Length: 194
Image 1: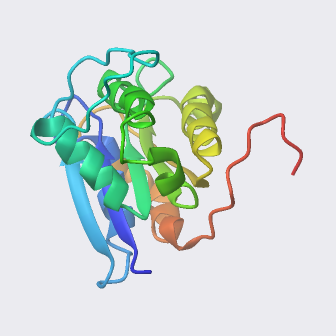
Image 2: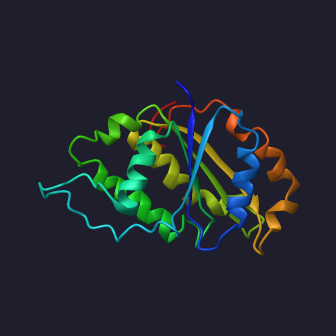
């Protein structure tokens, strides 16, 4: 199967540190790997309305919701590119993940089964020297992958606050060179035995 990467950009700032780091990692992908980049600020999703117990779910056919659903379903590798905002993913990114709940119940999509076995990755920049502060963000992505039966490639962390700062993080740039080359294991919840 040809790999198709979808990079979902969740920053409130264009060309932010998380995106710069993700682009450095993406440069290492083979040229035959399809890459699609979607900025959630340019393609905003509506506020998520929890309709789990309603029966009139309809597949979106136009607009940003349809664009993101179709792009997500087409991806073999989904990369969440979100800065660390208050120790978690950005609001735009969280809204995108919230929409997964609706897509799970959309007729004809079979969202969970379609995404099972695919790989979820994360790229984030944080303005903190200790990487442990990003654990809530990593947990959000890892647990989401586990629930969906996806593989989880981990989160590429870089340090930066001002625009372009991450490009001086030589350790992050070195990790970016091999980040997507690693084998991603099947995601597991923390309570599950290895």
